[in-house]
Length: 206
Length: 206
Image 1: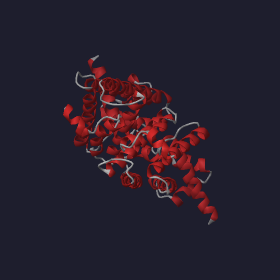
Image 2: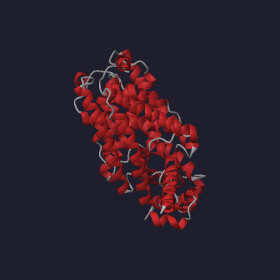
Image 3: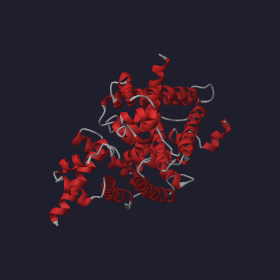
Image 4: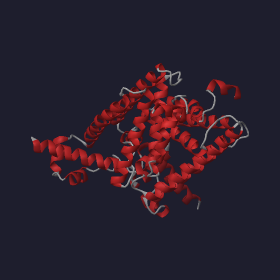
């Protein structure tokens, strides 16, 4: 059993790494198995199809990322500072991957959204749920910041979606230019989108 | 000659439509020729490789889109209104494609950025130039709005990049949810990012 689940983990890790680098369509079962150093036959023991594998990779990545987002966004400190922590951690994570692999890999969920939305309905639905959950978490913080009197927004849902959209857009630039600098704008932009004070005003929070 | 350039145009149109629907990696030369109704042999008469075709598709699409952006952004009216026109036209275009093809196709440049940045250097460079040019055009408008006293931003380049990033992020959501509603937020968000008045304040401009 230990050996079996080890092979599954290796396949998932190899697939994740290949998806992050080149997307889903370019992914081949033979290459995944070679990369994972497992016999090719074992792939279909664990996964019915390439799509089933992609869904498992997405789920595993989201389980880890949701934990990170919850830790960042559900602390006891002021709501906007939690949002800032999320952006800082995003930048740190992207920079660490760039340092180790030479490339900013960006956001797997955003990349797969653009690659697959119009051709793989099961994957599209899973990605919709993930982005819904991200927007939920950001909306919680925005609602808390509103109650705390830090911001003025009329529609917390729309504001949360805009903050996540801005994150995805800047991550796109980070990947395209292989440069994490665009992510430095996230905090000031979120304050602007939420019609909070300027970063200088809110520096006193830190 | 007329017939020759007609075959090239048909190949470009078919490739563009297939790239918008399923991305670059999924593209096959045989399928493009079938879709374009040209003999398979003629493909390599016009294009050295699939990458050369993709670059031609990107250039053709950008030539048309740059014209649209220039028309929207370089009018004689107030700078912020020009920006609003760009967002309105983006929404109109995305909705028209959705009506005719059943799917929001999103932004070809953003999609290819996430799909190919780390695997096709020539395409990455072309896309960087396009986004640089988009940011240039938006920065021109922002600079004019600043001189006009409509907004307050410290760094016009960064602000322009943030406006384009927000556009890409909302277009990502439009594609993922197959729904153009996220694009309705672009105008209000741009005003917020530029620290202009609220849409209500600026309604008087219209």
